[in-house]
Length: 63
Image (cartoon, rainbow, N blue to C red):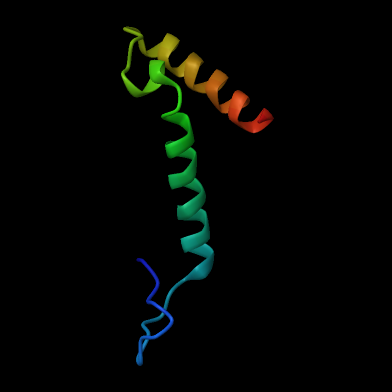
C-alpha cells in the first residue's frame, strides 16, 4: 500500500518496513531493465536467461 501524503487529515496505517522492502524490489527490477538482453528476453533457454540475470545482478551490485 502506498503511504498517504503528508497533508492528509486522517492518514491510514502503513507498514513502513514492508514498504521499504517493496521499494527495494521495485528499484531492483527497474535497474535490471537497463540490460536490454533481459528486458526483451533474447535468451531462449531458461538456464541461460537466469545466468544472465545473475550476471546483471552482480553488475548492479558492483556499480
